[in-house]
Image (cartoon, rainbow, N blue to C red; front, top):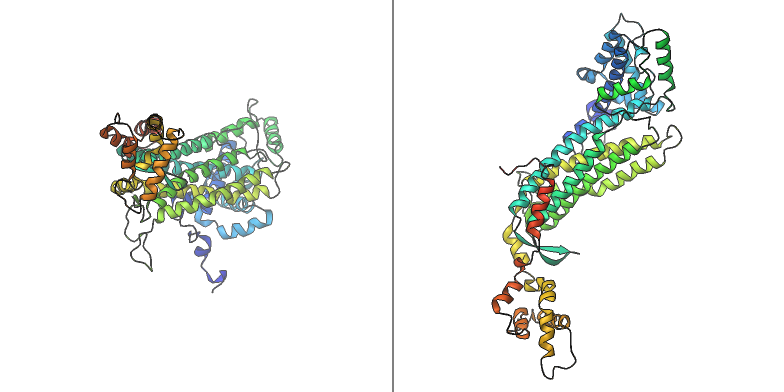
Length: 503
């Protein structure tokens, strides 16, 4: 097996996702790549230099040189592998990235003196890295939200179409009561929409981080004071004005103060991303169960070449759901890493906790991005087998509505028992109905005529209950409660989140 030295630079540099099929190839992965994160680092530095130039603290030529060094067209000129290795010397990549950016800026403006000193004024590594991370997170979140809205739209349409399609509800892996497939789809929809709204909230006011070496903004404050003394900065502009201008330029918010060891912006974001994965995982788990041959109620979209087995050609594996399920299993542990890092942050600059946060937060971005994209595809082409739903609903037969019978027929059975001469000690209607259920279950395999549940119940009921009334009570499709209304209510609640219309 060849070592790393035998691989091409491209192979080492690119994370192709061989072990992460859920997110591999998704937009979220591209947006959270090393190259894109580096671009955000450079652009934050360039934006800061531009703000300083607007207020006369550096020259316009210096700001233009910084912008040139951060131009995406030149990103390939930065050595990602070299930067990653050099980052080990200082514990983060910003230190060598800043050195490389300054060198490129100096080349862009060879006649301008002190170009290097105009970049990174009054800032520290964490300011740039945290701000770049949240800027990247905002970009990834926008992609995730687009996929969630598409998925919610598909599910809203599916729930509406099948609002009255009967199916069996299952609890603790057993048949419980009749329901509708529309209600299940509406439940999926509401989970996705709620997760999407939480992600919207978590990313609506992402703050820049700007505090300097110890969170006091001392270096920037000193630079501002010297600029005022030199007459190059008006008296109404202070350090906070500059930070607010930078936030506006980057599309982020300016908090009241730095948050380098208060990681609530990060934990809120991470929790919202994990919510997205959990909501997608719920759908995938249901599809995995319903797509089993013995259930046959649902099927994933059919795509040539996907879901096959190399050893068993007859199989059509639900691989979309498998990948989403895998993400749902992994996301809680990744979230725990972010939370653990936040709880371990100490003093004014964490010694390792901050560093442990980076890969975990990015992985959550990728997992949520992959889960949202795969779920949008899954529900947009989900195959619904209503015949199998009806078949499975009738497997238990009228026993499935025993809850209803307990409420409506037990009192009649109790009255009937009380009026029978020589019937022995009085028994409750519930006890009598349970006896009928037990006798029916015992005789199912023997197939004795007259011992089926309906026949036994008919014999025990008074004549005041007609055969038509009894058949109506025993029909599972007549006992779905408020399922259709619930579908309508849920669709109305979340339709504004969805990319969906009735036209």
